[in-house]
Amino acid sequence: MSSNVLRALMADSEEEREAHLNREVLLYAVQRQIQCQRTGAILDVRTAVLATTVLGDKRGSWVLTGEAWDEMEEWTRAKAAEIGATLEVIDGRKL
Image 1 (cartoon, rainbow, N blue to C red):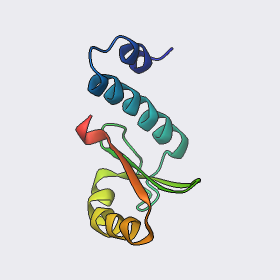
Image 2: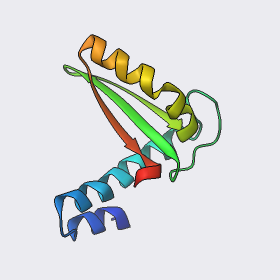
Image 3: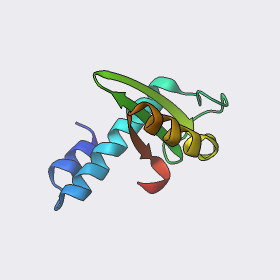
């Protein structure tokens, strides 16, 4: 069992639990992707961003460097709102 999952199980609050689980999800995504899907740069879990759009039962995810996300965030949020999708973002810089 990973340390993030163990920490989540022992968390004192729902917010703390969610942060530990988000770290684990982001770590998994970075390990699978290795490179930023926009720039090709090698990802670092501490600065990577996992952005997922959810529309009904369809999901689309991107793993990006923080800098690439910063460039795309406004457009992505607007596009998700335009099509009625939910945008879920896990930003390693905020964990």
